[in-house]
Length: 149
Image 1 (cartoon, helix red, strand yellow):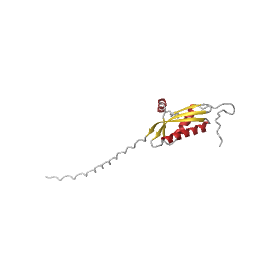
Image 2 (cartoon, rainbow, N blue to C red):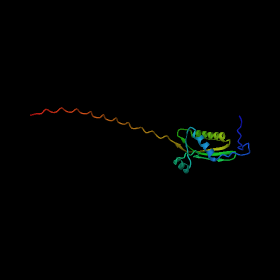
Image 3 (cartoon, rainbow, N blue to C red):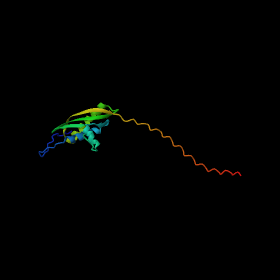
Image 4 (spheres, helix red, strand yellow):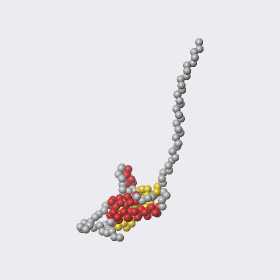
């Protein structure tokens, strides 16, 4: 198995620099694919920008990117019924693998903060609608009463 070269210097003598948002987006998408993760939560400003219609792929993720390594902090909400420890470890593993595979940076740490548990909303039983009463049948016109003289 070949070891991935983590040196990001180009053969031509230049260098490759990754913006923090790029690495944070990779982490966000990797974590969102883990079974048991309901959502990532971030700051109030991140929530505000989402309400304005802009999808935020770095919400709840903070990264520090150096020349050869990076560190990541992520805040998640776990779905009820999942083992929190297993979900958090899977998030760490998936983020580390995704960042190292896509960027070549060495991930020195992934800190997972579990900030809540998501409960599925209870499904209310819909009331059974009473069947509408059939419309009354039209009455036949009564025969005219005989005239008495």
